[in-house]
Length: 319
Image (cartoon, one colour):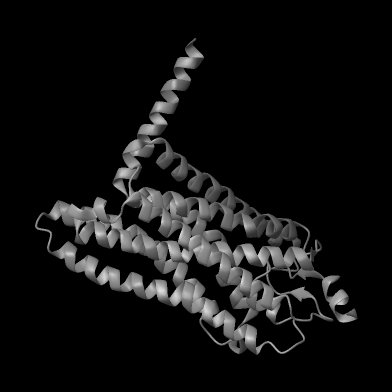
């Protein structure tokens, strides 16, 4: 009982990127700009899809869901990371707060990866069977798939977080990271962690290996279907639509696999921290840029919405 109370009273401290304040401030500015960019970009995509009836299709429904997930996902990590960058890691996080952050990070990150797999299936159906696309990808199925990604992510995150924070923590409580990630926290535990390591691997396989395998299989069929399209314009449009999704997939799954799909004993805290920057700050800001730049329909709609907004604003100012 005493050990449990001691564990709950622990406060974790984050290790700064550099002992030099000026470097910390430069990193803070870079992170802040990426975070603001991700919020603006993803919110713009969501609001554009929501406002434009022409974008009320399964493809853009999943894209809007991805944008919302990215907003909450980056917001789970960024605010506390930014504060600790400015204070050189002097602001601690409580035991409960750390567990809460880990839960939402795993929950939203898992749902994000699963949703990318669902989006690959959607593109596969659209290109392989365009005449029956609306019959197959009906709104009820789309809602069920999106909800399924959230439910599965929630269950996996709850089990993993509960297992890790059931461990005793004693002594050293400085996290070599900028948020409460799974492996850095596991390294601070002073009990037997073999079960937790096994669960981390299982969760990683469910959220990374299985969706990526499905995505790879989908793209084999997608490429075969695209090559059968006779018109060069049709092939270009299909490749353009899929290439944006594939770029996001490679960034997200590639970086996450480097960290989680390897033995815990080989985990390098410094490399883990650097790679984590990609999928917590870089990918959320790149997603809206990649989708808006590579997707002509979305790009044209964004321009139309902006023109309409400025026109309405000009009329209001005139009166």
